[in-house]
Length: 396
Image 1 (tube, rainbow, N blue to C red):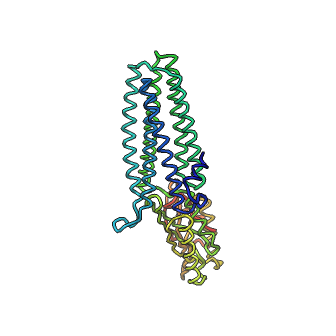
Image 2: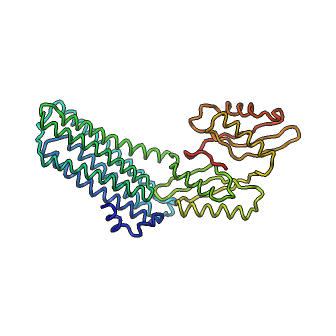
Image 3: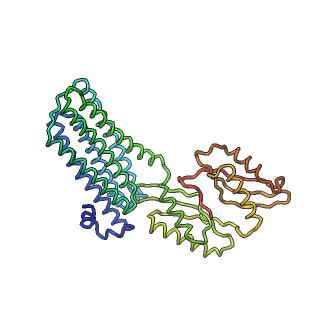
């Protein structure tokens, strides 16, 4: 079924790097999700009314919230295709985040009302009318959700789309919620004196609330400025380092302006003895490759580094060993040696992970203590900073 849908609704389906093809995949995923979730909502809402079951009604609204999420995703794909204009030079992709936050608020309201009604049903339960046909329909809805999970997982892995993979996981969570509803309906049919329906409604309303929390958290993180996806960061670094002239990459920044619009910068270390025109050509080529393959507008800053000087190399290795002894997560870049008449300055930057247990002062003192060679004539001038991505600095 999945391959049939792809074959009929996605043109040039194998060209997954093309933006229009990826948009077609996204549209197919969203529209399929909308159709399935609307169908499930109508079926479960009708069953909930006919059986007088609050747990089934709660599960129906859980599917409705999933439908709204699909609508937001589809809206986001559409906005990401809208060109930039004078008022919005970075495009309109972030509008998806605003709409998603509004959806999460609506989900919170729905979850609260369902939770309140379910609590009332526990203390003042209504008779739930069990029916085998309705039970079979509810069981069929579980199979639909399992197929939706497989469908989104297949597409997500095919085009390397994390959002679709997350949607697939959400469908698996819905299977659990519907299973709770199914169990409540079955138990209510055998033991109507126990408020299984109200208890099931509480559990399902908590699932609805949890989905709202997940949406809200993701959106708030994006608006505040969360680190870029680790896989994307690694892919960008690997692409830059695929050029043998580049010896290291650091100070990477990725700004997210919504789906399809990411702008970044990084420093690329190149031998200072290389011809400047050749070095510039290497940087230009790396920027073009990142744009074409990873769809990120990247600006690379050339950092000239002297790897041929034996004294500089020796001092650099000594500082690296010192950092390794302090904390293996510490990394260094922009290392240079500035000799003087009475002392020599070792100037470099140290990248500190946010979870590092040592302070800047402790790290600085430990580095000075580790530098034994000509210690009285060595001064360390260190600039401490934090990464703007989740990845560590990369050097060869």
